[in-house]
Figure 1: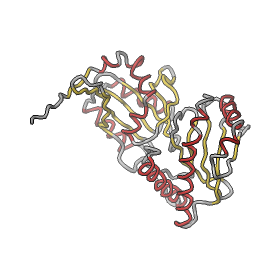
Figure 2: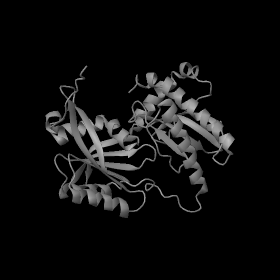
Figure 3: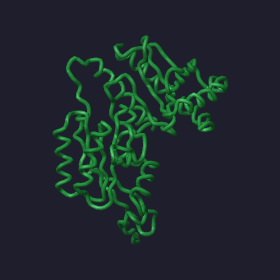
Figure 4: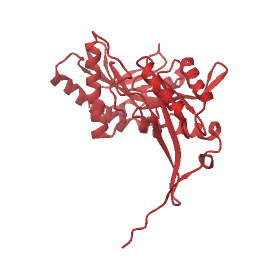
Length: 311
């Protein structure tokens, strides 16, 4: 019996998004997870059309794992010198650690320039050349396809300096934590641990809150909902409404929840704690990791239904 196969074809990007600034950039900002998955990092949008001097970057975002700034510049057609200059201007203008240049195709000289930048700029600065095309099988729904034409070399992003044993312990701990959260629980798409005492994970609405795991002061490990919409009054309002339901929420946890309004700060925190610090032995750190995973999953199970009522 003959098997009928479909025909794969490309679709003109302008049939899907007639205008880059008016259609594609807003779509990308609303669907940033599609790009996040390709780059294996969790990206949160800060602002579209971000003013940089007399120019505007299409999208400014941040990497949740490190809070580093990301610039995304979109272009229809083939790469050109104008947009190459723009990505460098925007990188300097917002002090970005990562630049993502999206175009329908890349000329070889521009691809080589991105490669050169990745090989010669300081550690911690990353450049991506991402090709975008729309594909379709017969009359199926069109699908956007992002392909990395050039990307940073592995392990370039962060240089662990000498005498940073504690940083390396943090990196190793969070690497194990995020690997288990990703592979066993589908909690995150993150793949790279950072040499810092905290890690932020995307939520159902990362513009309002994130799930965080960290080592806090006074030799404690912490898991939390971190409320930070960028608006202090909004954060406090959401916190107060959640606090009014603290008894109902508390019954769903086996740990004592700490409600930290943080009146002197913009953000608010809802957290649980356990004794522990990064210099414990492997067995004790494993217990903290398992506790953290349990609490992160519990936060994700309980809080979204409450938070969505107030945003």
